Image: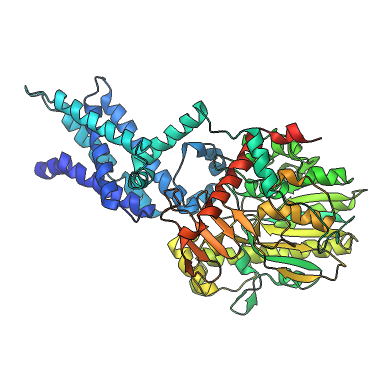
Length: 610
């Protein structure tokens, strides 16, 4: 028994557990290059931590070691969870998300991967070995000099990997993927940005804006909704592949399908360009035609900036602008940010009758029913911005609200649950429009609906397999990020599908054309995709910055964030293209994102609005 115990706490066994830990970690974050090199570097650093803590001249070095070791294991666990959802590991810039994640525990726990818990299996063994190592009587021979030399070599190696003074692509690849160097590099970049930020001069920003500015002009469908009320509905986790689709002969979105057939412009190649602010970033980009940033949600980072987005523009036309959401007013900092966005009022869960709670908040059907008398009471034209919620991950409905009949094998799958809540959302929209008709509000109201982001992550193996089978082709980012945009104008006698690619960034110019509302195109980075010849969307999260969609071509930057090693393919067909041909567009995507960030960082609208 003692022999087994000694083996379990021997340095050799712990080294094997270190290696096992890293194999699991790199498998979970889907590293597919240089795995052996990464494992060896990580193993070296873990050994350095083990020995270094042992040489500390502290009384409570055991406690220090346990805290350090467990904290790093916890960070690895967080990386795997974050990657499972965002296709990226955790950054120090995302620490702000802890509060938001805590607010949606069911959604968080639904993303847990059981294998991630194996990252903690070595903790008790490593601690026991460390204790034994500390309790051993010191031998006469001292290894301090040798250990200091090894520590110096290790530190020099880490600095070389993080700073990459030779600008080596191989070193960059290792640094971006290896656990320790990626996080140390992240901290290094944050500190460097704070000390010496790489800002564009204001004149340079204005020059870029002048080059990309889309001059407004008389175009098709201009003013078809002029003078009408405007209701914009942001649909939670609503993807485009469900539109017009059937499951076992049942339409998934029967009401929206009918809506598209009459008085409607339907944009089938519309894409989510959100950052880490998810739903709130979809709102921000939609309302302002600016790109969100990767560092955090724009509603918090740039809360009190000056804006002239859709709420302000509609108010200038004499409209009352207000927002409605069936969750907490403070979530994503909406309560504080909305006045600066131009909303005069915000109706949240605190203001609603909480008669029917589904998932995180008041059900969509209840929210829409409660909204009707609010709209009816308005004396003048209104712009109502409504955010739905019931279709939120993990897609749970009470039994009485389930209306799709599923195959038994799909009942407990994410796809099956998702299709059920999508059908619920469709029913809620149908009920809302019928209520608008009953109250005499429908004919004089433009209704725009769009999805904020995906509900089903193509990076999850089980989800990918199920959705691929459902849609009849490989489920990739072109399908995952594709959300619908529907602009319904009663009495317009228009029924047209627009296939020009676009994204949230394009909503403001597109709806401004429909409503015949003038806007300052100098500080908007989107275009009216109803009339545009070709679309272009730069992405922020899920696909790393530098990724873009141009026409029918999607470009995905490599996971190291470098042009080399990237991929390009045609949307809908998956045809692989030569990625090296799209460096100009890649640089354009980076320039657009940088320009948008500088507009926000320098609060340029405040300086240039008349």
